[in-house]
Length: 202
Image (tube, rainbow, N blue to C red; front, side, top):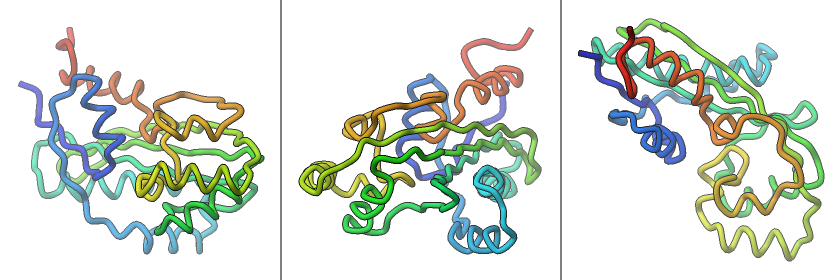
């Protein structure tokens, strides 16, 4: 009997990715203070991938410590552009400004996933996508933010590539799932080795 599977994240896109892959799991947000952790890591001059991996690990280990035996998935994404790191915008106005800053430029989206059990990290993977945004006019940004609504505040890039966000880009390089916030393919391979997925290990 495979162990229970828990997603330590409130992210709707990550939940949807796992559900679409046919996994049976529950959701339990970790409660990790991400802003405080990021500030500390930035003070140590951590790179974007390190920040994403550290936060993913903290989420997974915190939930796994209180859910003995369960396999807990933690994930995080960090957006970097020309040495500047971007967070989820707190307001629609902040999202519009962030998109204006990213327009016409190429940014990197670093996504990491960690699996923990009984408070210890078992496995992790990280990947990076490169995305080039079109130059934007003010009227385009106004229309995009108005139509997308509060959803722009739920993503580190102020976009959902699987929806209206596709209109923002001229070029995308990298794994689609990574860009949505979860390196799904290596995660599925790891889970399959532990009897979680569509088939049991041989």
